[in-house]
Length: 403
Image (cartoon, rainbow, N blue to C red; front, side, top):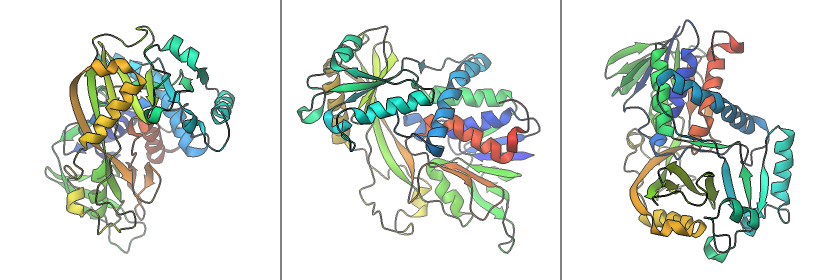
């Protein structure tokens, strides 16, 4: 059985590796760029599972599945490929102020409730007071750590959540999948799709016409992020996915902040401070929407499909917003004020319009086209669970080998 995956960010690569463990599948992955060049290459890899507010249903199940799978996946990939995948197992610390806690109930009870729920689900969360924050993470300024002079009142520590390097992960997934026989074709653009007659119901995709010739398959998996919109347009079933820009920067302090033996990812006010070793930290990320976006406008008005096919330049990075994120990080950890900025970067996240992220399942009207796209800000977090979901659609009920 032939499977073609379009897109080789972290999601496409994870699907390729997962399917490569099923006997009898011939898998080809196509991407117009090298792996991890788009949203994946810009992500910070902060895996907010237990600390997220998702507590039930598919949204929580996918997070739980992925966090659990990463514990085995990272050592598995490192052993297979000999690559080192930076994987921070020291948890995530979320800094809170009173406004952050005010979710309809008084005090810290919203977070205390989450602690109870996670405990019942087999996960561990802790609420720290300011004394514990100072003791464990002395780099954090609990007295004036938030803009508008809001004081940090407490924090939630999630020891089982993780952070990893998304590019290193994706390259390892590609190499491991190659070892298992997957064919990767980079620099290949999909030009058109040949489908069964419109009167057939459901329709099926017969083959894709690409810059490297025609590719036929039994299954086509669209994991192309923003590229999914023009792809599905070729099948006359447009999935409207729009770009949201994120900027981040890497700074060099020259030594670990606080306790060198305890370096969790720190987050608050939607700003992440991520230790990446050697006294370097990633700081991010902004959330920047297109200036011309009109929530009510139909797809034909925003943006033109030809622009969606190549969304680079759609949203110019806002330097003020990036500086604002840096200032918030400094408010959390004042020592960052003296850090040297090593590099800045940005990427476009794929956000589904008018439906929740991500978009996983069959393309409407087609029997053999699967969607694994539109993960917005959670592509790295949800990649393993997405790969499981796609595998189940192709090989139901655990048929096949491996995994």
